Image (cartoon, rainbow, N blue to C red):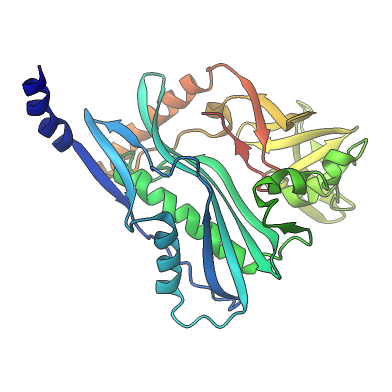
Length: 328
């Protein structure tokens, strides 16, 4: 038996393929505010995970030995002579690649949670955050596709952080891991007895309870909000993040506006991922021209119809990013 195990070990080892997460996208500080990128890796599991793809085990790893080296070297490569004075902090809380089966199909996903802060006098000021589950999106549904999707999203996070004004709330190093609760405790959307009626163009104005003044909602025959008007100005419905009417909040989604309720965990809509985030067509269909694109569109449409019939549950909204937080 022992001899058999020894014979099997090489086969097991060589059946596993490793995919490196590359540094894709620019993180150059064109605003010239930062002097360094400092990584605080607080992941409970530093392994990036292993998933199955076409009967092969795929293990993911950074192109550098550690997450800290990966991000700091990426920053240095893109910012050889930084002219700023701020230390930008990247707090890494979760990053794991995994499989998820939906309607019998195998999807490749990556759970990502990270936030940026500006450090000043040993105090930390929140800037931006990611708290989501990524898919390859328009990239191929393959290990390389999901591996590229992750750094592209981090590139967006870091570049947005250069130009975003940090929060005025100072957080100590000891309280840094509790930053989300600290920030939420001061948001009027959670502390006020009632929500203010009106139109909110973005999540920050909603959670701060500062509606855009003067807009009147316009509805169709089905009593659905289609736009908002302020004098001669028309605001398309898709540009509205949330509106509040008679004290009730309605969140804009891919399926239209949905009522957003509040419990002790936060604001949520009762739905499923298939409804809120429809699957996009795999770009590999495009390799076969117009015929392939047509087949891909039909297949994707049928797939989304099935996913939208999945069980519904409370899907919460992240008050620090405005996006939906999907359960694993």
